[in-house]
Image 1 (spheres, one colour):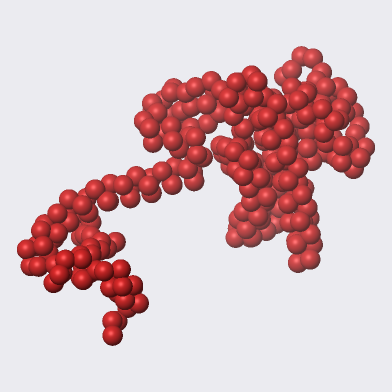
Image 2 (cartoon, helix red, strand yellow; image 1 turned 90 degrees about the vertical axis):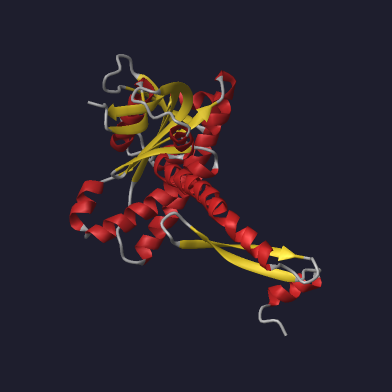
Length: 297
């Protein structure tokens, strides 16, 4: 009778011997095991075991290199985002390194977050932010978008465009993600109300344009981020959304591929932009809020 079911399975497959040995890392820790099987009559001999033991240090070193690279890649993806993480891991780490890309841009934040954070204990604020960001980031990432940065209660994300012909797809995908995010946000508020907690408000701004994606910062401390007039535009849209009472606001450049999925709310001034801009929202938001004239002053 064999002690473990796997040994019975291996015997039934014709193995005559099964050897398990630890892989010892460079810091002398055992983090994984390696297993070997033989179909030779009599199984492994002393010389076989000695030979395997002799190659294990090299095998362990190679396995540790691959594991550390996997862990590094996972960490970079988690903290920088998939594309930024791959660029940094690939060696794009010099200050000023960057590329110009076209993208649909997403910028969102919570309404009245400052007063909420003043009233709630720290752990409650962290829990609130995690719930909120799950609503926002989940739909973005599920559709191939890239979350670039969390700034307090704000989130900056992009949906890269392969070329000019790809603009329609990127904008429609970002709009679909925004609608799903708002639906998830409504469910979050339902749960909060059931627990006797106040409902939250959110503002999502959408724009499309060309941005610089790369390393910016001090010589010893860099940030991989996106800058450019398009980023300035989407942040101004988010600010105006709050004054208009809208949860979603988009530029004409973003809305143009979306046809009837978005409706115009007229022309509005934006700080730092000479001409008034025609702005758009989704029909359900236009029906929910009576849009009044507002200025981004």
